[in-house]
Image (tube, rainbow, N blue to C red; front, side, top):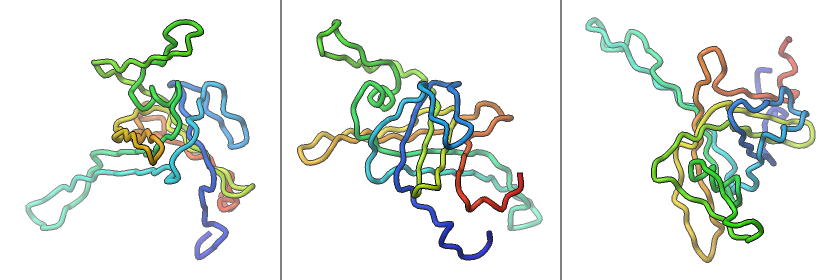
Length: 193
């Protein structure tokens, strides 16, 4: 609906971030539970997530004009940034770039994570869900992507450890979307099926 409407202002009051292996089953609505393939990454910093879409346009310059004659899309980046607050068998490998946490001996209670000398590709599917009150829910899924940047890990006496990551979407192929939004939101009620 055009014009000012306070009922269309959204606040991502509470939400969560989930990760799964490539090809994981993606919910087709906002009420179906995420399958067990998806791992909830737990608490994030109060900054929540930052979603950024950046398109790079290259100008086509001509001899006859000082202004570009047209633009050509040369790049599209879709990134999600957030800081995880929990350390466990899902979050540490996600932050570090793959591999797994293992127990050194059965029942020892001592666990090991080894960071490989050679980086490996660690492509994942990423899901984000948030609610605004009891009637509005959004789900956002990137079916293929990878952590492309990590923040410094700070260990101090006065603050929690934060695993800050940037997750970048990758194309599955040109016929599939880079990301999908699912919305249960009356703001879109005017759209015909």
